[in-house]
Length: 158
Image (cartoon, rainbow, N blue to C red; front, side):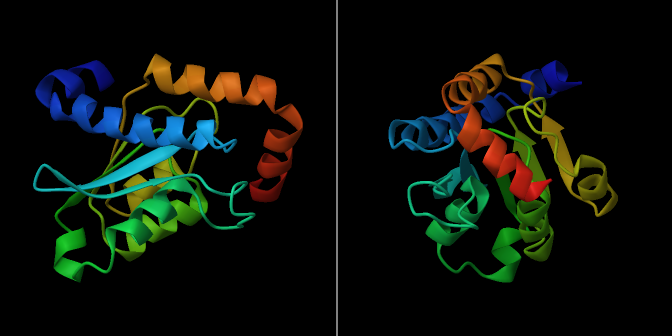
């Protein structure tokens, strides 16, 4: 399913590369390497990366940072957007997606930390998982270098 989706819409890889740039930015800052971009009409309108560690934040996940950086869009605008994120959204970010009625989410992977995928789909979110090695490898590298920090974060949200 994922491979077919890439071939049907090669723009997914273009925008996922933008999300990966954000993830790498977080990694370079000493943060968790998760990135996101919000796209409307094939144009990036917001970028963000996980800043939990950098800002000592409890909520600055990549998706939250991305929507914050997009600024205040009109409700109708969110309904025309696609959110690209390197890791499937957690429960908090899934709630944000549903609150703003973002109809489609494309995630780089869901193996590192599975999110509420079934719930998002039940709520009408069109969720595509690309299962990209680059996303999985970046997270694996971070976790191997930061086991205690990662386990602390996982404990908070589990």
